Amino acid sequence: MLKIANHPAFVLPLPERHRFPMEKYDLLPQQLLYEGSIEAVNFFKPELPDNQHILAVHNKTYLDSLYQLNLDRKKEIKIGFPVSKALVKRELLIADGTIKGAEYALEFGIGMSIAGGTHHAYPGHGEGFCMLNDQAIAARYLQTNNLANKILIIDLDVHQGNGTAKIFSRDPSVFTFSMHGAKNYPFKKEQSDLDIELADKTEDSAYLKKLKSILPSLIERENPDFIFYQSGVDILETDKLGRLSCSIEGSKQRDLFVFETCKAYGIPVQCSIGGGYSKEIKHIVEAHANTFRTAIAVID
Image 1 (tube, helix red, strand yellow):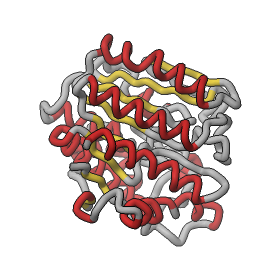
Image 2 (cartoon, one colour):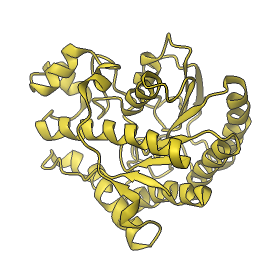
Image 3 (cartoon, helix red, strand yellow):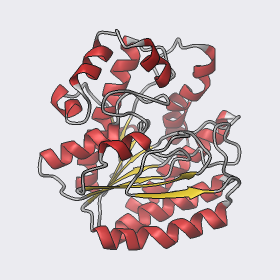
Image 4 (cartoon, helix red, strand yellow):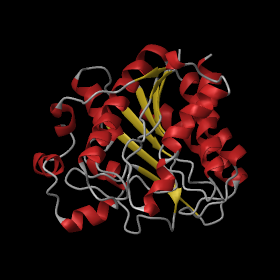
């Protein structure tokens, strides 16, 4: 069974420029249910996580400032959203969804989330629409509870997972792999354990060839017992914030390869959907929906 953390986009009203990207969190589960790819039983509802799980990654001073809504104005601008109780609650629910999704992955092979991939969040500040780093929090949860030892984070969002790279920069038990647009945000990048920078306008064939040449040998060398996958669809040519030129079909083939490779090596994987900012919402929803369709195909 595929278990999916559902995160309703309850955070509106937001400034007009932020509303469009948030619509996908409502439309994506609706589309998957409408087409019959999944049923209501596939969803689970995250809860507010224990603070100790968040504090395994984030500084107490930073977390307190989020709870108390007294974040320094410069830090709030870095995040890109006006911080509110609803947004903080949503970030906490996302983190719990990723934690529980990881547990479900241990049971069923794959766990999914209709949100997450908040890879720009650092221990003491947020950036790029990210306040709490959900996959880093879940990785620490697995290790703390002796559910995993060596973890691989595969980040295929068009933007480098700079927060994730920084969090695990001195930790050999978590290997960070980011394949992203060389000229995309963040413009000052951190150093992942493996960074693959792609040229502007990289298309499907070159993208998939590069990924397929790297991932199997990386898994064999690092021998992880758990994988987190950040599956941002901002690699699309239609994306407003990306600089690559992949198609919806190419993005689908990317997801299929990742899930099939994890299955071939017998490694459970948790997937958070990451970014997607195409000009038309239908392109965003279709690309994200393909991530779930491919997971279903592999898990069945």
